Image (cartoon, rainbow, N blue to C red; front, side):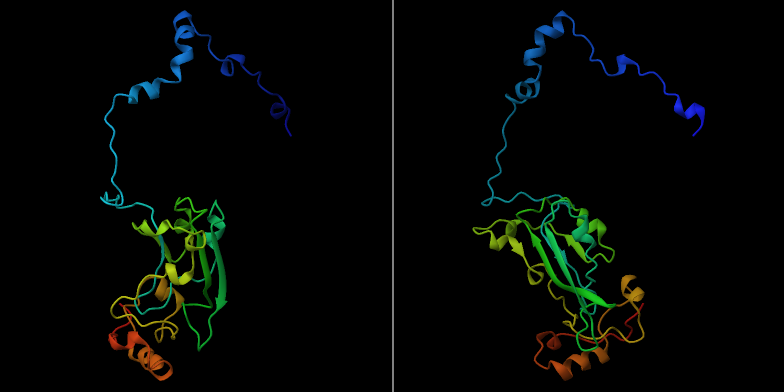
Length: 222
C-alpha cells in the first residue's frame, strides 16, 4: 500500500452538522412535520366503490402471476428456481423435475414439478419475473383472486398459476418438435404442434380434450 493511500483527508464537520435554525425556523419547527397533513386536509376525497364498481388498472399493473406455455403447449418453466432466489419475501417455492421421453413437460432436461406462490407474503414487486430467463413467469392485471377467507386459499399451486390452454395448443406431456433444440423454443421459433406430436398424444392419451381442437402446423419453425 502506498504512502498516499494511507493518508486520509480530514473530515469537514460542516458536512455532517445540521444547520442551525433561525428564529422563524425554530418557531415553525414543531408543526413542520404536519405540512403534508395540512396540505391534504381540504382536498376532495375519492372513494373507489370496489367491488361494486371496478376501476381499470394500469397496463403494467402487477397482479396475479401466470406460468406461460409455448405455442405447442409445452411449459416455459424449466425449474431453475431463479424466481425463488430473487424473491425478497421468500414467497415462491419451486421444485424441479426431470423430463423423460414419456414425460416431457418443458424443453430441456428439467421442468417445474412443484410451483407455489404464497400471496400472504408476496409484495408484488415483480423481481421474480425479471429473474426468469425464459419468460415463463409474468404478472397479469387480475387481482380479485388475491383475497380469500382462508390462509390456505392464498397459497397458489402450479395448476392455479398455469396459463389456460389456447386454441391450437396440445396439452403436455409430449415430445419437443422434431429437429428442434431448447434454443429454438427460447427464440419462439416454434409456432405450434406438429402431426408427430399429435399422433404421440393420441396413441397414449386418446381421451385428452385438447385433441379435439388441435391442428398440426405445416411449419413448426419460422
